[in-house]
Image (cartoon, rainbow, N blue to C red):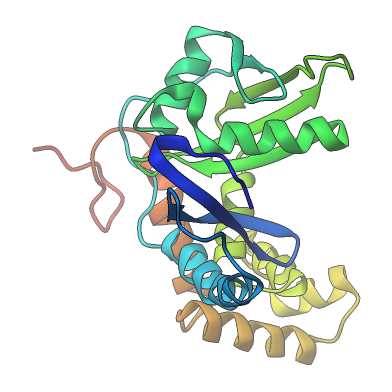
Length: 250
């Protein structure tokens, strides 16, 4: 809880929306200035809200794929201090941050979160979704333990496999289910997957049944198509494709 009073607000209660090893967002509740501080009972209610809120936020990432708008195709660099204030910023980094934040780019929450994590652990990685639906990869590393606590953060287009990892996580798949799904996306058969993962074909099929249940997609083809057409195809040029793969004009 934070006793500060930004914008006339009083006590603040924050809940990290965590699912396993991943943090999908942050739930922030603020009291009015002069109101009583949050109690242990309030914290317990917030904790109970965290699980359904995490599930809803995680699933919301699947509502749409990436857009085809103008975005940077190169990395940018920003240096922030331990308070999250930007000390220097490249033009490309500013463009990335403007895509992440409606207000001042320096106040983008993904930037502050990954910088804080790097300050405590030395290095941190994160991926965030821009307002228009484009993924951006953030990597931060501490520049030493000086008084200012400077952290360098790079912002860049994600590597080809990174959106897939986020998408599969958003579906709520287990680690083993994600591994099997990635094999499916590479076109591997049940027998090939079983051999590569040292499990039985029956176990592969059981995991695939769970994948289909969690994603609401009833076949391998539907699963691959959903991820490809909504999250990868927009990268391959302007304009939609027809069902036979030809680019549509007008």
